[in-house]
Image (tube, rainbow, N blue to C red; front, side, top):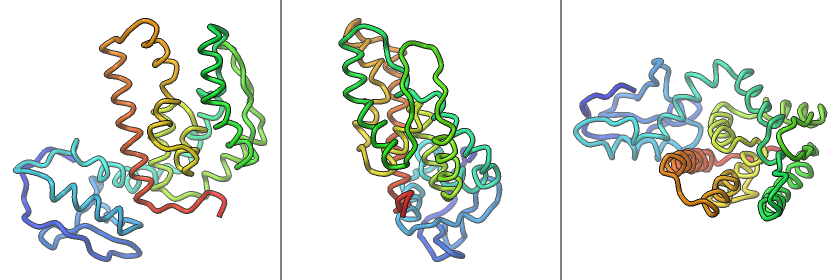
Length: 239
């Protein structure tokens, strides 16, 4: 969305197609690609409507993250589903949680305590175990697990895949993204788990402004995407 002056007085929600839409002075909001903004839940429509209502004299897209995710789902994810799924599944092959430090022992222990329960849950819940290694040498994940993730994610809707993609990218982990999406972990523990190595280094060596800013940005992206998934009122992956 390009920056523009506010051109409407009232934002509200309406029934639209098989879902809900947002109207500005009675005119339906479109996506940047001029598609209909049809939203799957009333909760999501209300959240986007509030973003439009909160705009001042100028429309600032950076203050409308829910709108941005919704339009991404419609304009981009829907047209590139196979690529989106493949990218998500790719995180399982390089999952942060599968690569453990060789030293020091304090970091190794912390990684095991925080990360292993999530991997155990993924292995049990999806019947898709992921292997763990130490150091930087790559580990080949079981093809059966990769196939399960691919099949499962291919069945999910464009909005879910959009939110999950942001979380997986920000965490560097499909396991963490799935655990957050399925309410196995809350958003703040998810952020801590995804930034565990950096947090350890900060505790040891002190803060670095660039690192701190990067971590804050990633944390913000995870929170926004987690809220987006919550507004979808998603069903569980299995049932």
